[in-house]
Every structure is written in C-alpha cells, then in structure tokens.
Amino acid sequence: MTDTNKTTNQQWGGRFSEPVDAFVARFTASVEFDQRMAKQDIQGSVAHAKMLTKVGVLTVEERDQIIQGLAEIEQEIARGEFEWSVELEDVHMNIEARLTQKIGVTGKKLHTGRSRNDQVATDIRLYMRDEIDFLLEEVTRLQQGILSLAERNTDTIMPGFTHLQTAQPVTFGHHLMAWYEMAQRDYERLLDCRKRVNILPLGAAALAGTTYPIDREMTAELLGFERPTYNSLDSVSDRDFAIEFTSTASIIMMHMSRWAEEMVMWASAQFNFIFLPDRFCTGSSIMPQKKNPDVPELVRGKTGRVYGHLMSLLTLMKSQCLAYNKDNQEDKEPLFDTVDTLRGSLRSFADMIPAIEARSEHMYEAARRGFSTATDLADYLVRKGVAFRDAHEVVGKAVGFGVQEGRDLSEMTLEELQSFGSMIEADVFDVLTLEGSVAARDHIGGTAPAQVKAAIARAKDELAKRV
Ligand code: ARG
Image (tube, rainbow, N blue to C red; front, side, top):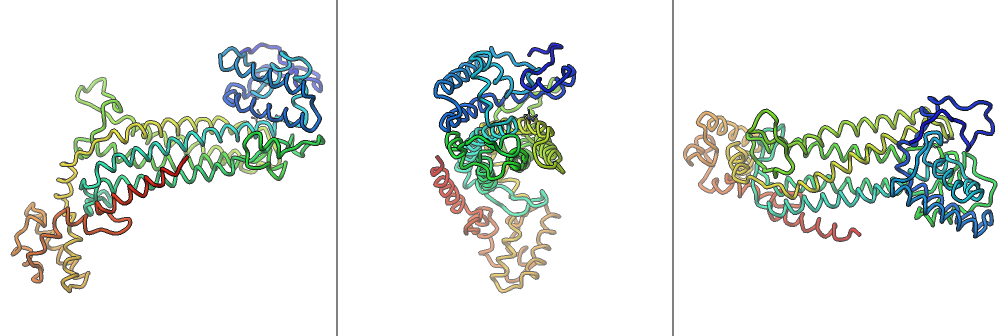
C-alpha cells in the first residue's frame, strides 16, 4: 500500500485548490478493508459497461477494452500484484485508476451514468449474496452433521432438563433434533434475507438517477439480481439489508452459543455425557491433565462480537437523513467481521458435531438417578382415577422418601409405593422404566424413539430437496 504525501486525488481533484491533508486522506480511505469486494466491483463494472454499450453510450470496442482491462486487473489482484493506494481512497477508485492506466481514456468512460454511491451499494449486495450462498451451504452441512449424530442416538436415553434440574427422560436423538429445528429456522431466515439483498441499486447514480438512457433491467439480469430497486434515494442510502443479515447472524450465533454451553458442560468430568474428539480441544500449559473444549467456548464467546456488530450497524443507520452519507462507509468492517465470525463458527460446528460420541451409559445413569419418571407415575395414577393434583401430591411424597433412602422410584418395592397410594398395582413398574417413559411420548414432536426416527426421515427428505 503506497502512502506518500502526494494527496491530490486525480479522480476529483479538479474542484480543489489544495491537496487533501495526508492524515485526512488516510482517515477517510476505506481501501484497506473494502478491497475485499474487488471481485464484485469488477463484476458490477463489466455489467455496467455491457449495458452502456447496449444503450449506445459506449462503443463495442470501448466495451471490449474495458472488459479486457478489468479481467487483467482481476488477475493482478488474485496474484497479489495489484498496488492498492490509500490516495485513491477506496476499491472503486483504485480499480478505475488502474484501468485508465492500462487502457487510457476509455477507462475514464466506465464511470458514465453511475456514482460510487450506487456502485458501493451494488458491490455490498453482490458480496453479501455470495456469502449468504456459502453460509446456506454451511448451515446445511451443520444440519447433516446433527442428523448423523441423531441417527446414531435415536434410542439413547438421557435426562431432559428444565432449570438444569433433571425433569423427564428424553432420547439424545430427540435433544439433537431440537438443535436441528433451530438450524432449520436459521436456514430459512438466511434465505429470506437473501431475497431483499438480491435487488440491484446500480442506476441510482449519486442519488437522483442519471440522464443517460440506462437499461437497469438489463444490468439486473446480467448480475443475477431479481429486479432493479424502485427508488434512487433509497437505493444509495439504506443498509437495512446488512442490518437484517447481521441480525440473522446474531440469532444463528445465539443458537450456537446455547449448543456450545451444553457441549462445554457435557464434556466435563461432572456430566461426562459426550466425548469431544481431541482435534477440537486444546490442552493447558500448566495442568497436564486438562483437555479443554475450546471450540464451543470460543463460539460462545464470539457470539458477543456479532451482537456488537448488529448494534454498530443499527446505530450507524440511526437518524441518517436521505440520501448517501459518508457514515455508510462504516458498514463494511462490522459486516465483514460478522461474515468471518459466522463462517468460522459454523464450520467448526459442522465439522465437530458429527464427530461427537455419546457417553450413553452416563446419560442413562443420570436419568435413572434423577426421579425422571415421577411425572409418569402421576400420569399412571390419573389413569387409575386419581385427580392430577392429588396424584402430584402422592408422587411428591414418594420422591421425598426416595431422596431420604437414596433410591429411585423404580427401585422401591410395590408395598412401599402402595404406602403412598393404595391404587398402585404391579403394572406400575412398566411406566417407571426409562424406556417405557420415552416410548410413551409417541406423538409428533414427542421424544419416543419412533418419533425421532420419523423426524430424522422428514428432515432428510427436506434436505434432499435443497439444490
Ligand atoms: N468508500 C465509500 C463507501 O464505502 C464509497 C462511496 C463514496 N461516495 C462518496 N460520495 N464519497 O461508502
């Protein structure tokens, strides 16, 4: 990156009587971060040049020179040979200046009928569309990973929790499918966000449109956008689509932070519910016995910075009058970091989750120890004619006795159970087993192994429809 004291900007120097202060040039420049959109900037320029040719503003020779020059620039950038200059402020002017350097005066015609204001709005949308498409694939990969772990655990019994206290037995497969449902909604939210991203602002020019006979439908089609935007002022100014994306990203991170929290707890010696393969963990430099669940911990931690970016973008847009304001240059860093953080977090989860192993004996033991079939006993009493509140009372007493004795309900004798409720009979033991308890919740959305298998089959059908 060159950063000299020569600060007269060749792109707009005409009006100025003195060069821009060297610090101001650096302070206002965005090229250090917006060069990330170089590919999209060139893509947009190629479409713009084709459209200008079709409407008679550029000749076919000029168009071809421009397209050829831009292709070479793309190569220079890909090879790391392109010299970015802070004096040229941003990715747009860097590429345009290089084009003019390469092809001469024709390069100066590319900017006809457009402004950096509609150009940057177009670049961001193209960039975000590419990223969303990649993220949709990563969410799909995560969902596939969840399904593969769930498939191996449709019958694995564990305690289900409320308030982190043992509540009722569930199957691990069912628990996993809860994560799957969250990921499914995340996928749908991303797809929905993509619809509003995929609209073309180019043609709005600085703010009011342009006097050239542009064909915005053509540019939209060339760039794969659904349609052109309908208001030029709105096109160059609003960044609601970026806020929407970051809000979707925040929800995805929020979900992953919940999973992360469980994984951290479950991998601990105290729970010992899951085994996280060593390749997703790190050790301690002082305590030789440690194996730390760094990946879930980091994802949990990174959630905070994505929320921060959402807050930055909301605040960036707040109270901005129409139309474009330089404030908007500040949209990029939060957006880019959101993309990077989300990519990394999804990738690590998609890799790690199918590699998790359930410690099923420990899960089973924990469910057995926690009076998790108490509700089943109450339901049993209701079936014998007891009102639910009275049944609740009877079972509560039985549990109190079990706590004192250090025994689960299924470990009591029939006589002991009958001392709490005389209507209890020998068939009670069918409902007090963990297997009986989960199998009985056999309806759509229930934890019965049969229902988990059905949920997995349904999910696989849905995933198979994705292109
Ligand atoms: N670098 C600017 C941005 O990111 C591009 C648009 C600049 N437009 C202007 N009129 N200064 O928003």
